[in-house]
Amino acid sequence: MGTGPRWEISEVLARTDLARLLDDVTVAATHTLRGRRWHCPIATHDDHHASVTMHTDHRGHERWRCWSGDDTHRGDAIDLAVATQHMTRAEAIGWLANRAGMIPDHSLPPVTRRPRTTAPIDAPLDPAVVRYVGACEKILWSHTGAPVRDWLHQRGFNDDLLRANHVGADPGRTMLPRLRGLPHGHSIAATFPALGPAGDIAYVQARYLNPVGSDKYDNPAGRLGANPRLAWTQTPDGHTAPGLLLVTEGIPDALTAAAAGYASVGVLGSQAPDTRVAGVLARHSHDTGRALVAIVDADPAGRAWGERLGEMLGERDVSLSVVEPPVGLDLNAWATITPGWSANLSTDSLPDVPIGRFVS
Image 1 (cartoon, rainbow, N blue to C red):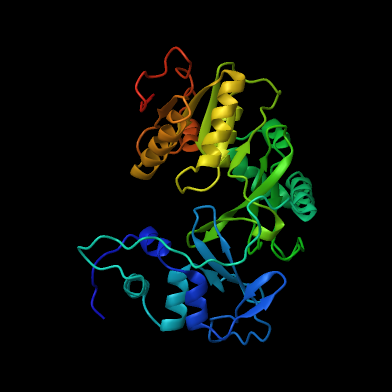
Image 2: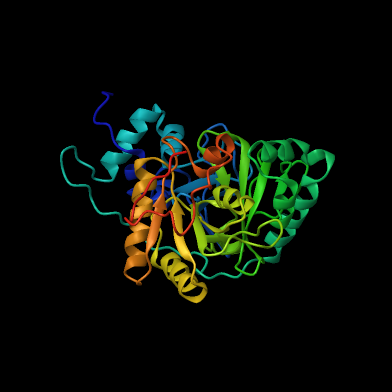
């Protein structure tokens, strides 16, 4: 095959219906009380029990996983095409783009997905998720959790902050058996609970220390609880700097802000913030009088993320200041190399324009 046009991977994945692709390239799917299942697409895996399920990752991309296979039996639509069509990754991207009707030098087709039965958007949190968080929290402070503790300390998270936010260590499924639908545990991971405004456990994300490909984060299946999209944090001493709420991309950056004594909340998922997120943040600002400051990744996607959130908050009569770290850094990386990153972060020094930049 020729090289063909170069497509943005995110655009191709957004226009690929993974369920339909699984229907087309794998052995017949089955239906269970827990949703649809397919047989493993890996040719060398004799999967008699239709062990493949689908989920949506923290970036909003659809992914598949074979629960009876090893940690290579998983991935996104591109990985599925590579495995079943015997293509290179570049060829698979072009093949999927063609399936989706993407034509060079033409407008992109709309993003459409076939309706399917999933957990309701407000599915209650399964107690198994809370038990998993508790088990991982205990492991973090044991000998087994030492590698994760070291990794967390290197990122600037001290023990008081970790305890206040119930951060844990998942040693992997061979050492910590778990209910199907919880993070897979193919290797050691740090677990970051998403807390509610009152400090209750609302969700959890596992962050693999040695991820396979781009599969860095792992979320519970939707049937075990809906992604709340917002993860609130607790400061080590329970006190926060007055006047500000820092809004970050993800939990680790929110913990970095909490470590500096700020009230903070992480938005889960790198897709554009939605109206529910904007509504909760606007109400918080109105109720508490806190100014909202988004700290975005220093790249085009991060800037677009901040601009979109600012637009939605503006529609609710709430202003947003956007702070951008030095190029190539997220907040955690910035704070690690610049301990005084927050020195100028105050209501008096924030820029008057919607988008600002602080560089130490």
